[in-house]
Length: 443
Image (spheres, helix red, strand yellow):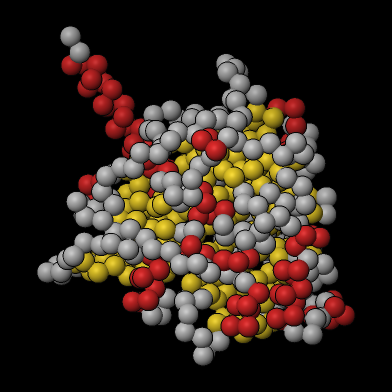
């Protein structure tokens, strides 16, 4: 057996992100559930599907947020702009708030949603510089520092119990090789607390086609923690430690809007004299209240050898493994004047050069997590240690198969992309044939 495991460094987000090329399975304890699914014959929710698009170009809007007004129920659109929103039947007269960075926020009545083909068109929000000129800070770096200092004032200051949907996919080139999904409970600590969030696995499923993996099984270690620790405002130490801020150049980009709020766009990149593997990207900061609403950034991997050391501990002797891209995104949401982690995703792409082989192999691992509901956890209840997910978890080793098309029930999930959807259908057909063959061969 041949392995490629990850190595981690301290003051970096790679301390919690680990990629593994691995054959075999690790025995990890099973997590028990916190929420219970009602065992009812009749569905107690309505599901609405549709697409969020630009009103002029008709292009899909990726990661648009859809929230049921007056509740904590929400979901996001996928990379094709498509969404699936499940709401209790008692909320058929409510409204859905649709928001997307740089676009005017839209209020859409639930009564106008269709079961399968709701089309939502968003209009671009034009920002005049004069509208925000009165509050321009002394520098982009000053704005970032002030934003980090104000996290206790602007973000959740109570313990919170969140329900989230998590998905990770592994592809060889453009073909799906592995797919794992889960609903998890996040015991979110206040943003002012140094206490780490706890995660409990509620329900999961997975499928892997090892025949496409060149005899190497590629797995993602860390599961939902990969997405959770991208929460910059809760875990600034992984990217913007106090002493590391001086290693970046910050500059203002063109302003934009989100939910009718003026947003400063701050570019950041490591200074030329800094040789560490740091980050570059954009921060979207509320101009009036100094609140980070989104961040999109990537790891500097120009030094391929050093970048490889961040992730690879052991590897096959006849192969070289290089990261091609390491990218992150985090989005925050607002409720009653307080902000909280809402969505994040991580992309890890690796190239494997094999000795004595003409062509290399390219694999990509993507994980994303969206908070779909939450409630305050004033009693500060926590799962027992044995019920908590470990940050070293490999979700693919925990999950079960894809036999049930109604597996997720009333839980909101991120609508599968076309390629994932077709892979799921293929898995179900294979499982069905396997059951039929087993039944036919039975005496």
